[in-house]
Image 1 (cartoon, rainbow, N blue to C red):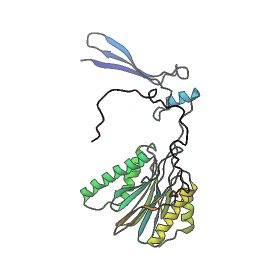
Image 2: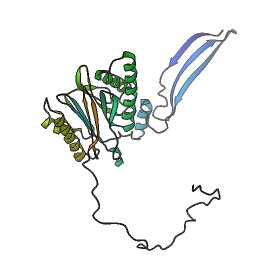
Image 3: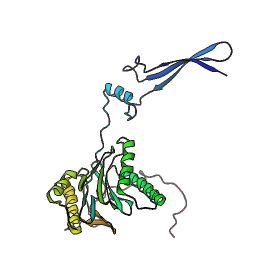
Amino acid sequence: MAQKVSTAKGGFNFENYGRTNEIEFGSISSFDHGFGGTISHRISFYFIPDNSHHHDCPLSNALLEAKGLNGPKMTKTGTTIVGCLYKDGLVLGADTRATEGPIVADKNCEKIHYLAPNMYCCGAGTAADTEFTTALISSRLELHRLQTGRPSRVVTAMTMLKQMLFRYQGHIGAALIVGGVDVNGPQLYTVYPHGSTDKLPYVTMGSGSLAAMSVFESHWRAGMTREEAIELVKDAIEAGVFNDLGSGSNVDVVVITKESTDVLRNYRKPNERAPKELSYKFPRGTTAILKSDIRTYVEIVEGDAMDLS
């Protein structure tokens, strides 16, 4: 049986750093093969950058930046999400615009996600990250309820979310507002993409958060009624909709109390398209057709006739 007798490990090889694309790591080992001699060999591992940045390869990124290649820029997303406490519970609100850079990808998306019967979560940031993160935690909360036989607590959901986001060090772009009512009363938390949290009576997040916060700072007070809280949340979301290009379309509201949870989808539609004043339907032949030939643009393939039944 072969027996390892010595190992000399080498670290980062600076010989090629800065001059080639090859970064070398390696080790030199000697083994007794059992026949009166030793065999020495070198095991080297090479990482060859492909002219792209990687989050987990800082040496590669430094090499590429030294060559003048700029790193990727942060993707900006737009949203206004808010939440506030009132006398008997809490109200969550969100706009419904999903953006893809300068393009409005969805005019009426849902940003308030279900976590538990007594708990909902507003999401800002990357749409897929917020949706699948909240769906995963919702599943874990369901299993927790089945195991314990008790309703989920808001602090439990907040802890699960912050531990998951911290584990990924901010690479999951989910900024969340968690709100719910449990045995400790109504509670409202913010969870940032890196895992930090706040507990406050009123909160805002997203690109329109400053406009929404100005409404809360001016008009929120303790002990509000349900109707006053809903109107305040509506005004805060509309402030983000009209003052932030990343936010827009409609206002979604969720009201959570000890007795019930009410989801008010499209509670307000401040941007409904007005009917056109004129008709823009022109009769056939208004624009002259100089030439028409479809055969140069398509390939005609013989096949079965289309089923018209």
